[in-house]
Image 1 (tube, rainbow, N blue to C red):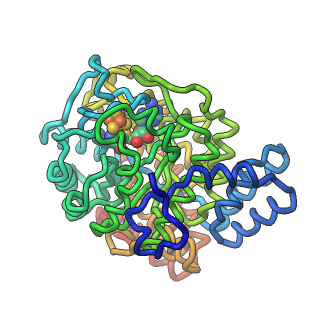
Image 2: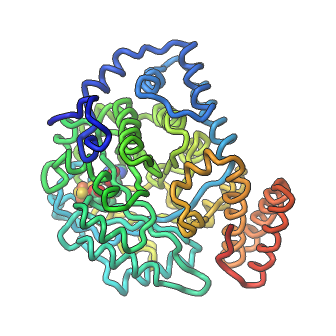
Length: 474
Ligand code: SAM
Ligand code: SF4
């Protein structure tokens, strides 16, 4: 495998593998934490600057408890000061679990002959989306195995199908994708269907570990996967999400890998990833792990705080793989999106039997099975503002996360009012009386601290929503 020499020009770096494991290990081995430096690095991030690999390496090497607490406090401060208290909500929708790959950590791997394979029919997709809309969802991520049945055309078809489902006041306003990587033409086809974010996780950035875990199929090709979002960018998809599956290899390496990937996309395409995901390995059928690298809760909190500081303007996604207690804690360190009311068995949103999780039907075990209403209730009780906003995506304001971060007043003018309006819709259409009371109280609190003109415009729109108008945004 060839890594790009520093002398390559930016255009030449495109499509080129950008991870040099020796370089990453050199940083980890050499950057010994120093109290003064760690504090300077935290301050640099609080001044809204992305951290270098060397700086990130110093943070991942920090083990002194007091200093780790300072890193976490820095992440909390950055989140509170820059992003405020909004949390965007979404749900995953598994469309098909056929898969020709053999990833040792995944219940859908081809060699799991006990897995119950299913691809939702168009009718089933519609039923699932209707059930999701009935719960109040507005943003979905569609998930697919890697299989010839799931061609770019098929994925584009399912995206269009989902956008077309309207039940009552319900509609899905943003469809994101988590699917195998395609070639440039394939990405172009999918891009035209109007997706929000295209997510592909590298799983592990370490080439040898990658080879150990990925036994067969197209996904066994590390470089094809590593350069997938370059191809997406070339195909015009500039809203992409990256991620690492924590537990496959040393978490410190993966954090640096994610930062490297971010740098690469920024350098080559002038736009970093919209989101970073950091799933932790959960139980799955035929799970086959090198157990040395499992990530403890403490390290998990720490790594999320470090990611927040390292890439201050990138969205961070936390999923229902984690239990409610862990979610509650990690949320404080800078997470911007979570799922709620999640079910990952195919067809389970519309299945009223509500069966227990079965690992031959699911990719892995989830630990937060609360309904969307319960998640929203907890968010409101703990001072967060739940949001279903999709405004930037629909107004063509790409790079919204960067705008939120860098454009003075953007959050107060756009994000908070839009969060309030989408929460108002949710309350009117889906909330029971107790949750509604809690929601309106939170909305009143939030509106009262907005700039008077924005507050008035927001109140006017809330009145319209109460009278039945929908989809009002700034
Ligand atoms: N087939 C697509 C692919 O491989 O890119 C979609 C992947 S999967 C449906 C979404 C993500 O779930 C994977 O990229 C992986 O990071 C994660 N995942 C797989 N097995 C897992 C497990 N046992 N525990 C937690 N996350 C897992
Ligand atoms: Fe297939 Fe994705 Fe599971 Fe790998 S992680 S076996 S590619 S569904």
